[in-house]
Length: 473
Ligand SMILES: Cc1ncc(COP(=O)(O)O)c(C=O)c1O
Image (cartoon, rainbow, N blue to C red; front, top):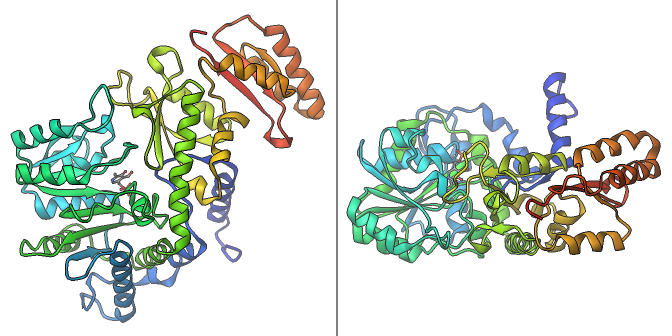
């Protein structure tokens, strides 16, 4: 970066770096890659055209790119403990969506059926949703979670599959926090004579780290992005069973020349780097910590009175119902407020949501990115105290009492007004700010019962205003 001459772009990159450093990133699909991954991405490999596959290129000068691609393939198979005789892998897909598209192009006749989880229940657009190309050229047979449990009901899935006879069943989701029973999915695919595709984009790092069941003994095809829990560059892989059906050959043809031109050799090199990193013992520990952190965060949300969808998590992500049938706040408001407090999440529909995708009932949170930065359970729990703006429910009075006892001041209403007092007192330093807030809170206490404000007398820049919306309290 020091030598970048384009000042405008350099500044933008520097600003984004700063932004990333400044926030707490709870976006479930993001992570922070290593310097080695960045170096590979920024390498001269980007200059090379290499249409085709190793030793079968349409351009000369590819002896090194062939080595890069072969290395990425070897590492991909090794990481997931796959034998070359049984599994093939294509490392050229530019990202997760084109990878999934390539599978359907290869294996589902146009107009054929893709059985995928609906977007509203945690599936991905590319599982056949109508706004995606996958829902325009093929027909989605949607499935979802059960209303009472918010987890998959495999008997119901089997009924749908047997009735609809999809060409392919997609398992593996975008917003499903629980363990997926691959054995049951295999049974459903067998019963309906469908191919089983697992999209493990979200959980690939957890599978690699041995903390989530591997789908490879059950699936015909496994797709994954590399940039979520697997902590690599933006890219995707398609694994396919090698057998008489020649799925692997069909997929290779669908990727190139079917959908893509020249592969991105720099990206493939970065994938190889990430795959090696993920095979190190430290990555196992990382994956274990990711899940422990998600469980700790989920437990703390529950303890504070929020509703965690399906009652918890077995993975890196959780869905929190912040609306709680009108007693809480909308997903958009929650996400906006958290962002103001420096915590980045995404608003998300919850199963059977009656609100809209632009202001749904939930937020989705993941622990992969912040675990990369070394956060442990206690740090995630602290997020809901030290700087969180989301407090709710029966524990609230206890919390207020506790905060008072610990020298935190103010319980009151009209959060925005107290926020302004905090900001106005800013120039006068910490003592002035405290007293400005104290005054505002004191004056406003009890005036608007649904909103409350505390000033958290934390240390230095950690000091935050806490805004509560207590709903029915
Ligand atoms: C399960 C799943 N599959 C596929 C994708 C698509 O990946 P990309 O955004 O790289 O196209 C995502 C992205 O969020 C995903 O969650």
